[in-house]
Amino acid sequence: MHRAIYALARLSHRALRFASLAFAAAEQRLVVRNQEVLLAAGKEAAERRIERELERIEATMRRELSQYPTLHRRLCEQLAALDEDYVHSAEVPPEPSNWARAIRSVSEIPAQDDSVVADVLDTINHSMRKAESRALESYRESTRERHQLLKRMMPSWRAMLKTLGRINKNVESVIRRAKALDGHIERYEEIVQESDRGLRTLTASSFNRFLASSVFLLVVSAGILVNFQLIARPVSEIVGGNILLGNFFTADIFAFVLIFLQVGIGLVVMECLGITRLFPSIDALTDSTRRSLKWSAVILLLLFAGVEASLAFSRELLFERDQLLAGVAEGITGGLGETELHWTLLLAQMGLGFTLPLVLAFSAIPLEQFISSARTVLGMFLVFTLRLLATLLRLLALVSLHSGVILNRIYDLVVFLPLWLYKLYLRRQQDQKRAGTGREGQPAGINGKVGEGLPAEQAGNV
Image 1 (cartoon, rainbow, N blue to C red):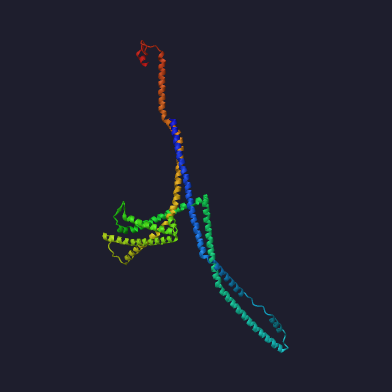
Image 2 (image 1 turned 90 degrees about the horizontal axis):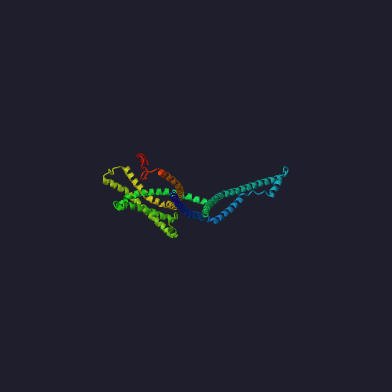
């Protein structure tokens, strides 16, 4: 029995150990597969970001810096003209000529005794003062012209500074784009090299995107329910509210189909705009075909929004009709304030019915993020589950291996009492047999039988 219990314990240990190794191998394969999927998704996302940054840099260069040679030539011409005007405006007054010094020397001759010389010197002095006055006036006029020239230079300076500021701003924008591009390329290199840091970053990003997209999809679900409440009653009047399809009303199914058609059209619009990439076939279309498809989807979405606005408008009217037919309402006996409130509610419902389909069209963005991140999160959850199962099976295998000894001890405790009783029984049998063998040498009766010829009590004892 001990050998059987030990054999059973070893068999269960080996079976559980084999199952644990199988789960561990499946976990390793799933980890490798998750890493491949995660790296592929991260690589594709990094390539898209790099492509987008390159497109932005190209658009900036084409829009702002394509006319840079012409602008540079114009700036050079303006700078040359400004420099020339500045040089002209900075001229200094000319030095006095030698003739003026000679006249000054003659005018210094003393003329107290000669009246002719005094008249000549007086005339020379008068002429010199007139010449000096004309020269000073001419210098002031030229200075005034130079100041006017400097004043006219200010708009050119301001225009040039504004142009240079715009160029500087564009260059700084390109530099920022280049730095962002360097960061994307660095992360792309980490993904290509399959580094641990890149894997941790991608894993954290997947969890963040999964949680954010889940929250947004919950909000979208609430918006779908609100939209359903707006159009359910009018749709039941159109389709018929008492027709059942299985366990559901046909009007409810039709209302949900109408809402999901709007979501699908919004998804097509997002695909044509290049915001999402859930359908590679749409991305593979030509630009003209995608443009035509985009405008067609936008027109259909606007038509659906208009239809929902009209259904939301008729919803309140249908409720009023039901109240009047049921005799619940007292009739329209209110004043102007109730009428204004009534039309305000109608317009609010119409606006809500028109804007909700347009808002639900953007649900394609969180839907794409949820689908792309759910694969990674689900894979990690499966890895954790397999790892937990492998650990539990390994623990059970260890318990089953040591349970053989425990079961043998329990078996010994259980079988102890009957074995002890059986042993007592065997000992009593041996004692009785030994006692019978010892009396074989005593005298027998007349017929040779044991106890014969003895008193009755002794014969009975024998």
